[in-house]
Structures are given as C-alpha cells and as structure tokens.
Length: 336
Image (cartoon, rainbow, N blue to C red; front, side):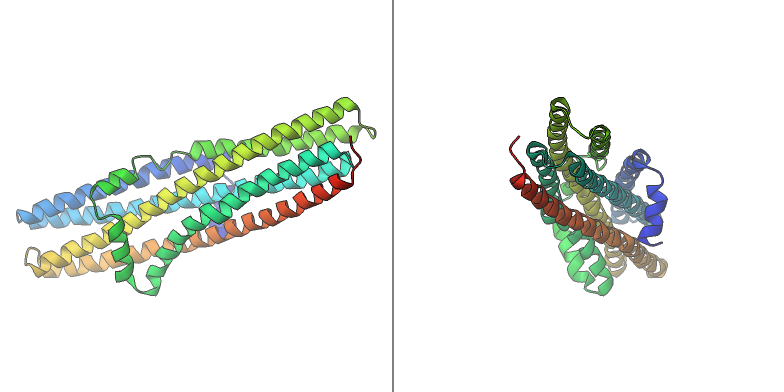
C-alpha cells in the first residue's frame, strides 16, 4: 500500500481519532518488544541447560513478537506523519487568512506589523522543523532503507554499538513513546482555532467599510494574542513531533537488531552443536523474511517523510514571502 492510500484512510479518521490510535500503537509496539526480549533471555538460559525444544519454541515466539512490534511501530509512525500533515494544513490556513485580512484592513501600519509578526512566528517554527529536527529523523529512515541495498553487516555493526549494553533498552523507553502525542494534538487544535479567530476578524472588518478605533484595537489585540499562541504552539508541536518519531525510529532499529540477534544465536549454537541444524535452517529463512518485511513497511513511511518535509519547506518559503510583503506595506503605510 502506497503512502497516499494509507494517508487518506488515516486522515479521514480526524485528528482526535488519529492521536488516539497513536497512543494505542505506541503501547503495543513497546510491550511486544519487551516480551520478545524476555523470550530471547529465556531461550539463552534454556540453551545453556540443554533444553533445546523449549529454547527453539521461545526463539520462535520472540520472533513473532518482534515482528508484531515492528508492525505496531510502523502504524504508529505513519499516524504521526499523518498528524504532521494536519499541522502543515493548519499553518497554511493561517498564512492564507493573514493575506485575506490584510486586503480588508488596508494600509494600517500597526495591523500590518502585527500580521508580519504572526508570519515570522510561523517562519521560525518551520525553520526549526526543517533544519534541526525532522531532517535528523529522516536519517533513520534512510539508514533503514539502505539495508535493502546491501551492506547489512556494516549497518548491523552500527546498530550493535547503539545497543551494546542491556540497560540501554530500559533507558530508551523510560519515557513512553506516546508521551507528547496529546500535547501535539492540543497544539494543532490551537493552531486550527487561530485560523478560525482570523476568520472572525475578517468577517468583522468586512462588515464596515470605515473601521472604528475600537475595531482596530480589537484587531491588533487579537493578532498579538495569536502571535504568542502560534509561537508557543509551533515550538511545542515540533518538539513533540520530533521526540515521538525519533523514539519510534529507535524502536525499529532495536527490533531489527534483535531479529538479527535471534539469527546469530541460532548460528552460533548450531556451530557449537547446542542446537540441531535441520530444524534451524528453515527458521533462519523466516528471520530473513521478517527483516525484508520490516524494510518493505518503511518505503511508504519514507515517502511520507519526504512529502511532509517538502510541504514544510513550501510553507517556509511562503511565510518568508509574506513577511517581506507585510514589511514593505508597513514601511509605506502612514503612521497610526
């Protein structure tokens, strides 16, 4: 299934339902990973005391749970990208409303400066998203996709360095993946409300050709409040967006590492005659099949990352143009 097919099936659920799904998938992904790790520990112990049948059963169960963890993580990250698309839409709406408002308010220097400040708040938020945050997350996607192009040994060596200590797992997931999902949803809802506030301003200003001093003051006050809200909401939304997706990417890397670890445990113990070779050959093929499946799941996710990043870059350009536009108009406007 491609990105757009999955996106529209998710998007139609709405922001609240998508955020709720994020929390569920996050919990399931982490729980499945932990249970898979417990199975691997039990299998190692049983191999040491020569409980071969039991050990193989535990390794198969571990593999199943790791596969499920990757599936849940894939659903989680896709929902997160879908929420990002709604964040982008909210910013686009605000920028469009600001242009519409400026056409009605005319050459009012104070209002033009307020409109420019609101646009600059959006510009600052998009720069943080594109330059410092989401690009870093996208590197994880590229790393995973590179597995399909060869060089797996080098890649797995890098992943091993990330998880060389057993305690690293609990450290990585000390803060739940779902932390921040609710706050991001609230931030987006606030941005959507700002677009609605601007609609009200546009409606009120359009009622009278000549604007009263009271109307102008109310308009200025609303734009000032909206600027503060946008600055906070964007900063917090991008911060939460960064953290929840980064944690999910780390989980996927951990799952890939543990799937590979299962294969290494089998190969090592077959070589040492602790496990029979015949039953494990088929098992190793299953491990490789799951690795490829995880990689295939990430292709539409990678496409989604590219689409979101491109959309944010377009908003950044649009915000920069609007900020210049409002500045030039304000410079020509008479003092109020």
